[in-house]
Length: 240
Image (cartoon, rainbow, N blue to C red):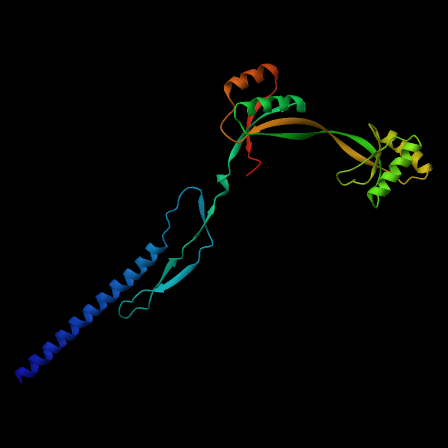
């Protein structure tokens, strides 16, 4: 009887040892897999990048005896995109009242090795002018024919080549709506279908922009002596 008792005791101890080893290996395997996933999907984020379009995957941990499995969330590799705040800024000098002055400064900068761009900026004054215009005609040939007709009758006009009124005829610009309307009525009496368009008045100023470095101090001193209201400002680069 004793050998039967010892045999059963040894078998129970062996079964318990095997069961404990199996559970430990399962836990190590699950932990290792999750850790591997996290390491593989980790990304060395640097400045100028943001996370976009990530997607969650679910893995199941080994459960404790008698408990349900617990989901573990692991993130996939995210997409890297350039952040919006990484756009470059450029320096500009102005405003200059006329294009000749701006071109002069631009040429001085080019001589000493700067890459220069020049822009015109229109600022509305709140006032308007009024243009009498014949709307765009069906073809350039028809527009030129009408233009010659006006000239032959002593009516000042010019052919419009650009903008929404391209292929139309401008017949004069007036500072008041009353004067423009009187002139329009006179042309209508001659058989011409014309109308009055409002033209907002603007103050045009010119700016000189560089895309690298800063303006040289020596040049800024010269410009400050020549142009009282010119200043240096920072703006977005035009050719990004």
